[in-house]
Amino acid sequence: MDNGSSVQRVTASLREVAATLPAGAKLPSSRRLVADLGVGPVTVQRAIDVLVADGTVVTRPGAGTFVARASRTTTVDTDWQRVALGASPVQTEGVLAALTVPSHDVLDMARGYLDLSLQPSSRLASAMARAARRPEAWTVPPPAGVPELRTWFAQQLGADRDDVFITPGGQGALSTVLRSIVPAGSPVLVAVPGYPGVISLLRSAGLVPVPVPTDADGVRPELLERAFEQSGARLLYLQPTYANPDGSVLAPDRRRPVLEIAARAGAFIVEDDFARWLGHGPTASPSLLRDDTDGRVITVNSLSKVSGPSLRVGCVVARGPVAQRIAGLSFVDHLIVARPLQEAAVELVTGAGWNAHLRGLSAALGSRLDALSTALARELPECSWPRPRGGFSLWLRLPRGVDDLEVARRTRERGLAVGPGRHYVVAEEDAAHLRLCYAAITEQQIPAAVKVLAASL
Image 1: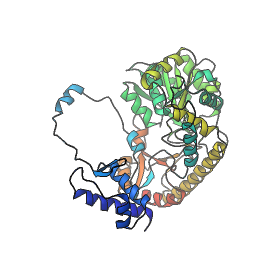
Image 2 (image 1 turned 45 degrees about the vertical axis):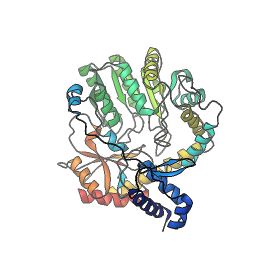
Image 3 (image 1 turned 90 degrees about the vertical axis):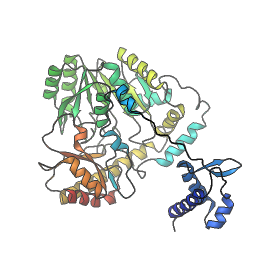
Image 4 (image 1 turned 120 degrees about the vertical axis):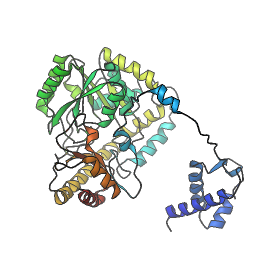
C-alpha cells in the first residue's frame, strides 16, 4: 500500500475513533497509534493533520490530541440583508472557475496556472527559506517595495526603478490601476477576447467594459479608433504580449498606431504584461512601455504565472502624476506587500537557476502545445484555432450552432474541465469558443483529454 493510501486509511480509522468519544476526550498517543495501526509515525502525523484541518480534532503541544468540540450552528434569519444590500455589483463569472482545483479524476484544461511539474518548487522553497533568514525580512518594507526587486523589474521592462512599485500580484494591481484612473460609470475599452478577471473587475467597480475586436496580430487599430470616438473612453486595457486566451502578440506595425490613437483620444493604456516569460519561440517583444514617450502606458507585471500561483508579487510601472495616484490608492488598498514574499522573489529571480527555469518552461509549454495541436487536428477537424505564440492557452472555435456552456458541462461530466468562451468576451460573438489551457495538464494526458472533448461535441 502506498503512503497516500496509508494516510487515507489511518485518517478514516481515527475519524471513527473520534466519533465514538465525547468532545474533549484524548486520543491514544502517536506511539500507541503507530503500534496499533502498523504504520510509521509520519503517516500518523499526516492523518492527524488532516483531522485538525477539518476540525475533527485539536492538538495541544505537550498534552496530546483531543476530540474537538462540535461547533454550534444556529439558524439565523438573514433575509433583511437582501433588502439592505440591494443588487450585487460583484461579478465573478469566469474568475472562480479559473481558481477552482478540480477533483483528482478530472483532467484540468480550465485553470491558467502551471502544474507542479512546471513550477520551480524546490527553488521557491529555498528562496523562501533564505528570505526568512534575512535580517530585515519581518520588518516593514519601503512603501514602494524592496529596492532590489524594483530594480530587477525595471531592468526586465525597460523602466527606471523610481517608476516601479511592488504590488500583491497582478490582479490586485489591475484593480488599483483601473480604479485610480477613471471614476465609476466610465467606459473602458477592452481588447477581446480578453482576460475575464479584468472584465469582472471592471463591472464590479462600476466601470463599463467596451469591446474592441482583435485578430492574430492583436487589437485592430481601425476598430480601436472608432471605439474611442464612439465611447469617449479615456482608458484602454490590453495584453500586447501572449494575450489570454489566444496567445496573440501585438504586431510591430500596430504598436505605434495604437499609441497614436490613444494619444489623440487623450487616453491611458493599461498594459497587462502577465505572460512576458511564457513565450514558445523567440524572445518576447519589448514591453509597449518602451515605445511610450509621454507617460501614456501603465504596465502591470507579475511573477505568479511564471513561478507559482501563491507567489503573489507583481509590479506597476507608471510615470507622472498618475503614478502618485495609483501608488496612493495601492497603499490605501493593501498598505504593504509582505516583505518575506518580496525578499523570496528577489532570491528566486536573481538566483543561478532562474534562467534555466525559464528555458525549461518555454520548452515544456511548447511541447504541450504541439501535442494539443496534433490531437485537435486528428480528433476535431471541424474546429479551428490560431496557434498561440506564447502563454498557456489555445482559443478553440467551435462549429456553428454549438453552445460553449453545454460543451463545457458535457466535458466535465466526462472528466475534463475546460473554459467556456463566453467568459472571455464582453458582447455577443459570431461563434462559440472554448479556452483550452495546457499549463495544468501533462503532455501525456492531452490526447485523452481531446478525445473526451471530441466525444462531448
